[in-house]
Amino acid sequence: MNQTENNKETTWIKDLVRLEQDMEAKGQIALPESSPSIDQLAEHTIEFMRQLRTAFTANAAVFNHMKGFLGSLKIYGIADTQADFMLFRHGHKLIFSIKEPGLIFVRMKFNDQLLNNKNNTSPAEEPADFIKGEWGPFNELKWTYNDQKINIDYLIRYYMTVFVKNSVK
Image (cartoon, rainbow, N blue to C red; front, side, top):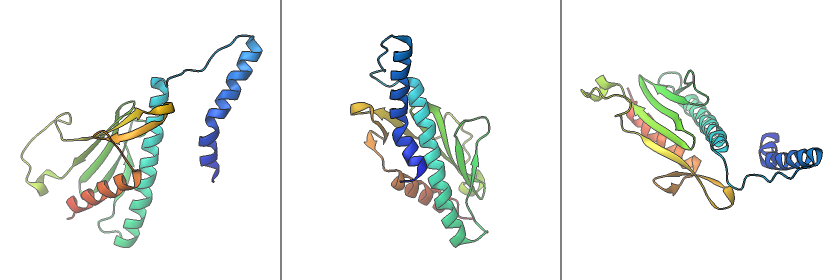
């Protein structure tokens, strides 16, 4: 187990110890929240987006190594956001953005000239997929697509495959 996993798994214990120490110092009993807050959902959403970006970056590096410079995948953070990012290739974009805590927007924007798309749709009208964070039993956060629990490895594989196939020059 690496240090990052260890810290992530023990954060709740540190919070529990801090809560108990505060209660002892103040002489008051303060019970922890029984259901997660919107702030916790926001934190988990940002963390999940960072996991997605890390996984896409690792897979893009393998793709680029095998493909070579021409036609490589690039990953960029989106300015003025905490964790939004996009894959970019040949003028095409695969965008992951946080719409609100617990809701991630996934959009593909392809080069209109290559796809002969004459529609001028606004970002709000563009087709998008939604990945939702839902609280399950024992306050476990599950990420879902169309009410089905997702596996991050298959999510990466699916979106990279669709993106690469549609961004061929």
